[in-house]
Length: 452
Image: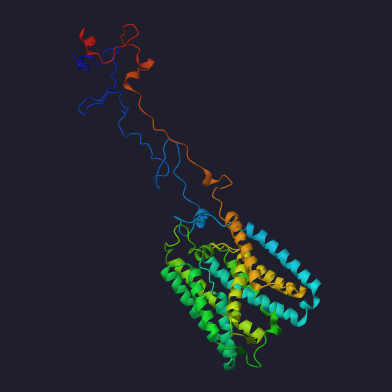
């Protein structure tokens, strides 16, 4: 006699239960259960996938939908999130180091005044200010390309070649000659930019090759003098120094804007240095190299007007050009600009150029023999240490410290597993009224019902 025989339905003590045997309930089996109560079917209670597998995931068991990123989080995302670091660069290390540079400049100013008070008055002061402006312009040019991740080591030869060309042609009109000098320097910068961004090669290699070519050109020239009666910048030395300082600080302040800072530093390698960084990185880097050449041209014109004569004979020109590059590179690195690109401070390059200028004048006032190459080597060495400090303490924090939304992780969700069939036992509330023999209820044994 079958278990589901209809003659037993409705009798006292009879209750219909679902079939818990393997395979479930056949499709043609009669519906079991209390009226109005649905029977469990596979998939009726969906389980969410593992957290993080989908941007549109929906969590269950009372968890909310994953919160959308805030505007602040979207603003902190790097231009290429696959490789870059989310978050803002920390500037505290730059501020602390710039305070050290400011104290060093103040100390050297005091020592120079104590050693030779006349060095800070009259024509000597004007010469000091112009020298600081010249070094500052070339240092800004090198620092700009450093931030772009393609340092221009031809900055010194470009400035010296511009000074020589301007002095040779100063009799044709200062404004016209200065404009032509700037265009020629811009052309040299474009050549370096094409080599760097089109072939995606390191900036130091391409610019160093161009620097050697310029040194060879300078060696074939003759000494030149600025025409008599040409503009004398000594009368406006203070304004030149202030203008260069404002230009350097203003340009560095633009680097605090995240789109500018990160766009300019996109050429910085993050994985394989030979991988191309995209059209945006190439455009920013090319503009930075061309702009650095223009700054070097302005520095060259100022050098010619300041010295009134430019010597090109022998190896002096090559030495002077490379010395300018070394001092400028040392000032940019010691000012807090990272040798890897992108990161830099605000006042650092200007203060470092001031320190180098004052140190050269102070050693000369004391009668010490300090070679520009020795000073450049020391400045570059200090700058490399500063680069490591900037990269260590200036990168964005990887872990949020405020315990905000970014630090929340969802609780783990464990999918309930069915108990083994042999360990299942009926609830006590459902056994009331059922016949039993001893302590065993003999579920599913049809022979028991045949005895009736």
